[in-house]
Length: 170
Image (cartoon, rainbow, N blue to C red):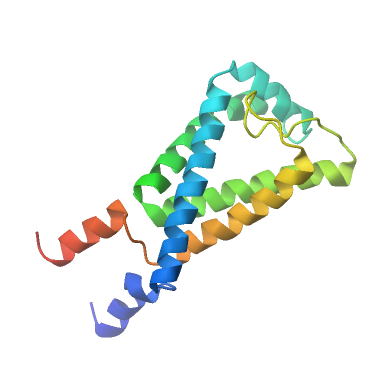
């Protein structure tokens, strides 16, 4: 690998690496990780058919697709949430969380555009019932935090620990 390629692929060159940004990134990882884990666990605590009915109320997918989403989405939220907490495959987890929140915001925004009123977005199953209009703003903030995680050199993460071990030949 030549010097130019090495510099471009270097984690230090992929974004902000100053300590304040790194601490914000750790806070963002903890916040998003906990949000996703709570969302996933609360959806798994109820029958998947209940969550499928909420998904169907958005009128964006077929009933069979809603049931498939209700089956797998909570597990995906748990996987991404735990990955963010541990700092394992961090850039992939940050990108995945950002994509999830963009998709959630799209669905919530589509409700507003089409004039569909739901009492709850279904984001947290039966445990917490935020209004969809509130979750649009919350999801937007979580998208920004996901971008920060993606761009900032990680600290206190399994990825950075593994990178240090590999760089020292251990």
